[in-house]
Amino acid sequence: MFGVVPRVVWERHFKPDESNRVRIGLNSLLVRTGRENVLIDTGIGSKWDARGRDRYAIAHETDLLGELQRRGLAPEDIDIVINTHLHFDHAGTNTIERDGRVVPAFPRARYIAQRGEFEHACAPHERDRASYSLADYEPVMKAGQFDLIDGDAEIVPGMTAIKVAGHNRDLQCVKIESEGKTAFAFADLIPTTAHAPPAWVMGFDLYPVDTLEQKKRLIPQAISEDWICHFYHDPRTPFARLREQGGKIEISPLS
Ligand SMILES: [Zn+2]
Image 1 (cartoon, rainbow, N blue to C red):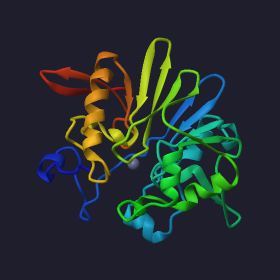
Image 2: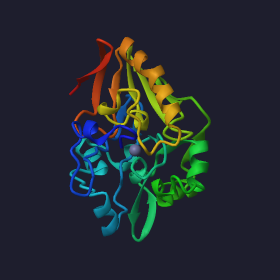
Image 3: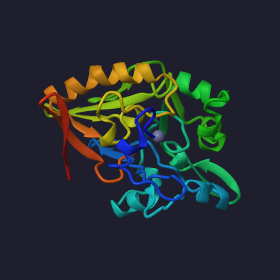
Image 4: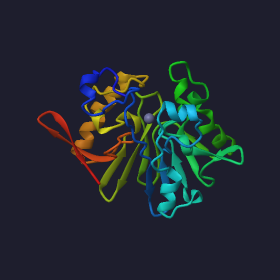
């Protein structure tokens, strides 16, 4: 999770267990625009055998469909699913198992992904093959529910997908603008608040220098425009504002 950052430094933020695992969040984001219900990323899902569950120590303290239900939303109520990319920890509840078949979890939704990411996910290489599970996106494609986009695009008024290469070639972040305020889902560009310093780049990243450049471009904007920042993998602080204090990035958590 921390690339070239030495363990003695990162373990101040994340204490590893005896198998060298750290606690990571899966913070799917629900946006209710008044017209549409939009989900940004769908967690790690439930299509796991015992071996996979154990390898990643998948806790499922809560689950996406249950959380939606607690907010009065059935799967049919989701209009749009935005996949920032198609790694298994972001597209896991794109689909569910029902009667021995894997089907889209949100039967009415349009699923939005970058075309380049979809094509890559269908033919990954040795470096990132382990990050993809065909069952997360093939049934969605077969059901005709994918809208593949090329580059930046407005998804609904005020909500824009922004392609940001680094973690992989076709990651998209999501910018949400409303009533003069901006929220920004950083996805795996800045997975946790600990990854705010530019050099804290994950070892998973295919293009770490691009990640570095994008962070140096976007973080000053997040600070000067007072963005509400969303961190998908942060186990404690899904939302925060960023500030600069004496050349260092400070995190102000939001409830
Ligand atoms: Zn991820």
